[in-house]
View 1 (tube, rainbow, N blue to C red):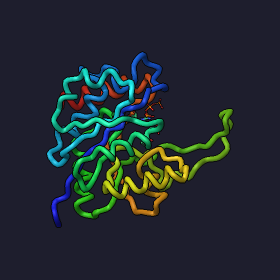
View 2: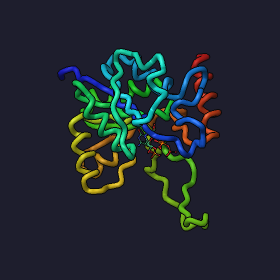
View 3: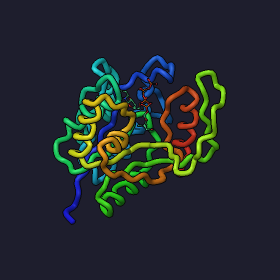
View 4: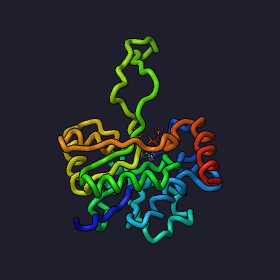
Length: 230
Ligand SMILES: Nc1ccn([C@@H]2O[C@H](COP(=O)(O)OP(=O)(O)OP(=O)(O)O)[C@@H](O)[C@H]2O)c(=O)n1
Ligand SMILES: C[C@](O)(CO)[C@H](O)COP(=O)(O)O
């Protein structure tokens, strides 16, 4: 099989409203760097990833001040109203790659082993694949007032994580088609599912959390300082 080539997209154009911070959460300090520098590091270090497209908000005044912005693998793209718009914009900035790994700038604890897991799966199965965390708790559905409606069967239920990896053209067509039809797309796999294409989910590290609310920062700090000390 011809050796596959890989690019990455880092959607970083969000405002982090749930974090309630003075700056977008991807620029908050975390374990000696900013969140985004941690999220970028393993992608930039991986030898199979030739380009990393960082998707920024139009008014972003932080990223270009970081030393990492000068990294030769990094290209920039302009974000959109929703995360899926930002990812589509990032896809147009990919120069030359067969596959793309899309990873949230808000997930700073990504491990090299999880990138390896995705790439090995692609090399063996030649199909889109995402990282996930299987649900461990009993799952409830409630109404808007917190009244429990029912227990949700958790067999086969996963938390979708990132990176999510797909053939570049397949993801571009799937996203364009889903967005044109007004489908609600919160991750790349949901566009692929809508297109009817196959996708696998693999158990990734449970410390690959998305920093979303203030209390997530302390947890991410613990995960990162533990891994840095190993
Ligand atoms: N229009 C958008 C919205 C989100 N993102 C990115 O998508 C990732 C995951 O989204 P989320 O955790 O929801 O980040 P925010 O949208 O910034 O958070 P919030 O919903 O709390 O505002 C983040 O890295 C965020 O920067 C993006 O690139 N473009
Ligand atoms: C893509 C994602 O990380 C999968 O869990 C998540 O959906 C992104 O966060 P958002 O709040 O849905 O934008």
